[in-house]
Image (cartoon, rainbow, N blue to C red; front, side, top):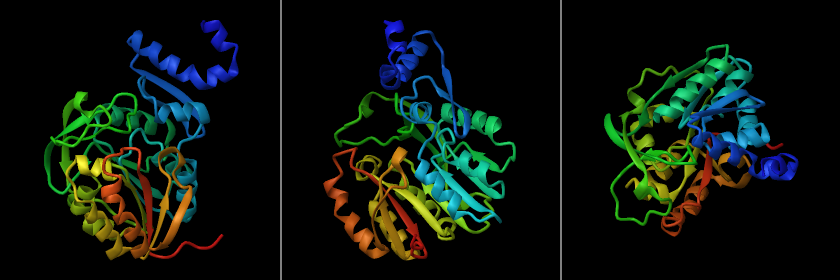
Length: 301
């Protein structure tokens, strides 16, 4: 069986990583690594999302990486990676421009350890500062649920009667420390780009980081009504903040396809368009997009 798999390149591409991941767990192997454009990256052996994509393609969110490279001039700036996972968007920009100061936030302990390893292996310039924290509207310790397979789907946990469409009821629960972004001693040097992907905690991130995030020149934030509803947050907090501080918006695909452009226009038009999805998308975890907010309209290519 193994021999036939290895001799068929199509089968290797489709099933090889899954086979290695499954075999690793059977053998109590807790980490695997893959080589690609950003160097050798390590993750948990049950990572069937981020590291799998990196192993198969050599990249993760390439359009977003190119956006960040174009955004920051040679003089540098500040990148806030809120929901950094194992570093697949922080490390590329830190490698490309060592004058960009990167702040990477990742609350989950295993992802955080792998984030540190990947930075140590691939970023000699030491321009990344990490925080093992969840950003919220208040400081404290909160429950946090662990997803299996998609290690980018770990998230804060709130008891809810909403239907669990992603097996949330059976997830392991740990505790993580939460703080307000505005309470952290972060030094912002412009231009500032913030990426916020926190699996439904986005309203709380904005509520606790209004002063800091208002200084951003651009923000990319995931918009998932299902995940926000499960955490009991108000999606309108996100929309109001974007309307108040940004003039232009764009709706894009997410995750590995982040950066593929969709509808764009004045921020008010974008938030009005998304307002209707708060209810329509609430029961479907697969209905989600990224919002890119800027203070100036994008320059025509």
